Length: 340
Image 1 (cartoon, rainbow, N blue to C red):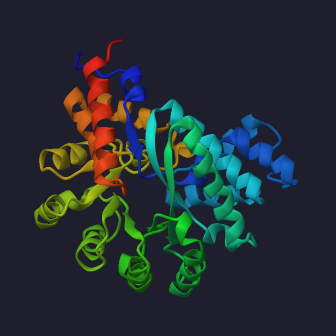
Image 2 (cartoon, rainbow, N blue to C red):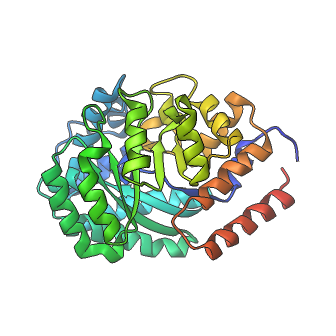
């Protein structure tokens, strides 16, 4: 096939989504529907009015929209509907395996029970099997909350350990280094959970935070994390230890117009298993295939590079070697038989 990557090719490409915040998939239409269902006054009465609020110019203004939007999520049914809406979109993007972030503290802090959140989301991951998607949940700590809040959240989460595949760390990184949560990560690992953490792009102390996450806390993946290219020793560490990096081009444009594409290519060339995902797609203008396509277009990626990114997503997923091989075979078959 031609080296000219098309939207049809990226959409049909079998892939895993490993960096997706379920709260970040709250589309304006669903937000309005849930507000009306739960009698929550959001100050907007039409989809167009909700869409106008999805505008921001920096992290603070984004979070000022992002967290209040969650007020419409009140019941188990709401969380189920949110997750199923995403999973239908994921199926349309041929996502075969999904590991989905959720932020319980963003809900428990406003009076929603942990059980309400996880039971609604988990039921959607079960029902995703009907969409031919293998879906799992990653519980994230909000790093701008206290260590004590994280401790309590993990204690509650461990009561539902069979419904969670791993833990992560997200939200405002400034003055909230990974080591702040080292104890919670150790306890989670001891309980058999996988570990990942956000190391956001171009943050204060980016390299130090990446070093903490990799060398001290022993995470298996870095979410974002492309600033690692500034330290060749850490790049070599990631390559040697098969540390996955989950890059999100469209949300990266929020920080840099080059969407960290050069860094992604450099990591590919240095055998670091970087992969592409959609982060908060309702807020950043595109789901996973759109992210693949945007990166391919701006950096003139080859078919081989795009396929390697998809392969990396399966290679760094928290699944068995046998399941990975099934997805590798599916990916190879797709490429071999693809035609426009």
